[in-house]
Structure formats: C-alpha cells, structure tokens
Image 1 (spheres, rainbow, N blue to C red):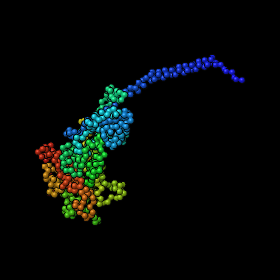
Image 2 (tube, rainbow, N blue to C red):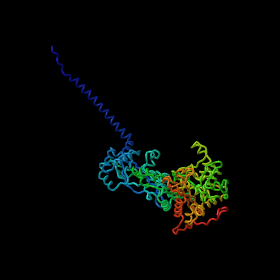
Image 3 (cartoon, rainbow, N blue to C red):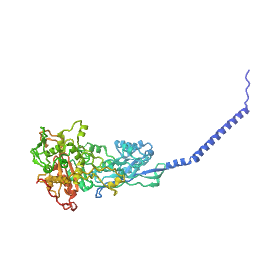
Length: 640
C-alpha cells in the first residue's frame, strides 16, 4: 500500500527562516560594530602613529655631505681641491627590479660587462635606506642626454651634481698628500654611519688619510617632500653641513719641482727639511703616479700597470724605502766617539787599505784599496775613510753605537704626521739574539760603524739626523702640516684634534763644541782639499756640511773588487748624500738616495746642491740676505 504524501509544514519553515535571519542580522551587527571599533582604534587611538607613518612616506631626511677641506702648499698654491662633476646614482628602494635597471643602463650607455659587475658591487655595498649610491662618475654630455631620454626605463636612476676631489699638481705630491678613494666595506665597518652619511670617499694615503678627521667636516641634513615616485618636490627644513678644515703644508711646489728635476727621471728619493721647524719642504719619490686615477675608481688596466711596474711608482721610497745608510752615518759615529771620550780630535789611525781585528786574519777593506796612511777624524770624515771608522766602531762597541744612533732617530719612526713611515733597523745584541738566535760578533760591530750590515734606514731618518746635527741636538719632529685654518699642529694637539706624539729627548753632549767639530768635518767633505764631494762644494756660493754614502745592493766577496761592468744595473750600489746649509746658519737639511746610482759624491751630491740652490739662492744667484752668516773660523786641532 503506497505511503501517504506529507504535506509541507509552512509554519516550521517560517520559523527556520526567521531564526536564520536573526542569526545573520546579529552576525552583521557584530561585524559592523567590530569594524566601527577597529576604525575608531585606527583613526582615533592610533591617529598620531599612522599620521607619522604617512608623513614619512611623503617626507624624507636626506644627508648633505660636507665639502672636503682644501690643501695648499706653503705659498698658497692649491694641491688638492674639489671640482664639480656629474655622476649617476641608483636608489635601490625606488628602482624596483634594480638588477634589470642596471642591465638597461649598461645597454643605453653602451658599457662593458666589467662596468656592469662594478655597478652591481657598488649598489650592493652597505648604505642607509633610500640613500642614492653613485655608480658612474664624470658623465659626459652625451651620457647625460641618453639617461634623460630613457628616464622612463630607469626608475631610481638620477644624474646628480657633486664635488669630486681633484689634484691639479698631479704626480708632484702623490706620495706626500696622497689621495682619496671610494669607501670600501672594511672602512665602512669602522666609520660612524651618521657622520659619513652621503659621503662616498675617504682619505686612503698620505695627508688625505692622516688628517681625515680635519678634512672631512660634519654632515648636514635636509627634510624634503617627495611625490609617489620619490622625486623631491620641496625642501621643508635644512641644517647646513660643516665644511672640513683647509690645510696649509710646509711643502713648496717650486722646491718640489726643482728636486724632481735634479733627480732627472732616475729612481730615487729626495727629502728636504727646515731644521728650525721640522717642516718638510720637499718630498720626492720617483717614479710617481697620477693620484686623480684613484679618486673615482681606477680601471683594472691602469692599476695593473702601476702595480706590476718594475719601477714601483706606488712605492713611497722616502717613508717606506729601507736602505743601508752607508757612510752617511759616519758623522754620527764620530760624534759618539767624541762624546763618549774613546777618541779625540787628534786621535790617529794608520790605514794600509784595510783593518784587522786583533788575532783575526779577516781584512775589512777600505774603499781606497791603497790606503790613506795616518788619518785623524777630520781627514777620516773628509775622505770617508773606512779603516778609521772600523777602529772607532770597535772602540765604541755595538751597545754604545746603538744608544747614540738611536737617539738620532735611526731605527724608529721620527715623523709627526706621516703614518706610512717604516721604522728601519738599528741592530743590537738583543735584536740579533731575538730575531736571529745568534750572538753578536765583533766583525758586525765594524761594518755597523760604516753603515752596512743589518742597519736599515729611510731617507726621512737620514734627513732628520742631519737636521739634529744642524740644530745641535734639538729635536723637531718632521711634519707636513703647517697649519689647519690658522691652527698650528701644537694648537691642534691642545684641542685634541691631532694625536700628541711625544718629542724624543734632545741630545745633550758633554761638550757643546763637539757639534761645531762634526759640522766642520762635514764642511771639509764639500770644501776641503781632499773632500769626496769637493767638486760640488767648489761650485756653491755658500758653505755646505755634507756626507756621501754608498749602500751595497749585492755583497762583494772577500778580496774581490767591485766591477760595475759585471753587475746588472739594478744590482749596482745605491748612491746617498746627506747635508745641511748654510753650514753655520742651517736653513735646510736634505737627504738624497738614487737607486743604483753607485756614487754618493758623484751622483747624489749634485742633486743635493740643486735642491739647496733652489731654496737658498735669490734670482741673482746669490745667497738670500736672510740666510747669510759670517764664515766659520778654523777649529783647534783641525787638519790643514
């Protein structure tokens, strides 16, 4: 029997619909209330916070890099300045797919894959958010036009005008003033990120690095309003940056050029110091290089050419070159002998052309194989007699020699503001025991007395030793800086703007007349009848106190004679000469080293004289009035 069909329950369906409508209405009401509460929270409770966020999307704080201080020589000639240049910058946050933007940029400017890799490296380098990163410098007019035409394809890319470091004197002061370069990752970790906001260059070498804190200045800021694309619409507030201090150096362009000309293109070094102040008047290391190549990034090829050159143009021979001083230190050994009392002016030594230690068969040769006969101190210095100084070194001993020569700055850094300076080496018993694990031998004392063996010095140390003799033992640390915006180095130290490097104790001899005696003997080198540099001294219109030296590059066996024809040019002896003048009123001390020049008197001495002439003589070829002084009188006991 079929089941009866149930009729629809309209009452039940109506109740179900009403229930569902009620639940839906309640849900809508709750959601509406929740939305209203959330809107109240956002717009009322957090109004200030979100208002600030919105404002920050429209207003940005941009750093204003300070203008780097200028550098001048003593006469106001510009050595380092800043010139305007157009550069290409990329802001990653505004560029979107910035790698694609770089690809587009390389294609538009027709650049190389190496440039593309360099751009990416620079953009990836650490920097502040929204800070434009310069990737290409010194844009040409054509490059600027191409970027402008294709601006719609290059979001985040802008052409910016900025000041770039420039060295108008080029190679002249590359080793003293140095150069700036782009801040690398290692330097970025050690810098104050706020102080260097917007700054992309930093001093790398020389004065630029040592005085970075003075030259850099203080960063400024400006609040700017931008549109959705990040373009600046207006400046709301500005705090001007504090420019770096301008530096005036003791260096003299005219003297620098004269020293370079005197070297005549040969490899070598020239350093000239004012004994009264310690100011470095000229500092030449040849060959040199153009520091402008490093400012905006040197090319791989240019750097490889400099780095791989056999002449080492990047090597600062004045500060880092280590050479045996040879006979240039004989006046210092003579002074040590007189002050310690082991010899006097009348002490004589017989020179048969060699020297032998008691009970030893080894012969220590004099450069004059025939010997000079009986020799006193004046003649020994005048002739650069090795035998006399072998004997004197043996009498002094290595301990006293180490003490005296160290007090002249041999084997230590002597400068105030040249951080690249090498220490050199003044050997001692302790040094050899520590570094060679050997005792000190008497023969090593002898060759130390003529500036050979382990002893190594820089040209700067040799010039400073002459300045000390000229100053009668008063220390004036060699320095490049004359003043910074009118402040002397002493004032900078007092204001804690420059590190205080203590000056060594002055040399106080038991008899001050010893200074005059040693100066007189050095004069005889230039003006005496048997002086090794008398040809140079005879041509001078003023009195020069000097001493020649020869530094061996390769050793010569016992009994052999130096034959230049059998020695490669780069294995020949170095030529050195040190001097100060006028002898009785010293205004300049000079040290010259000519690599493989062989003869100190014949090659280096003429360079010294040309440098001194450029400093001491007036346009008429005569000694300037302020440098004139009465001629010295003969000293008691001096050789005739």
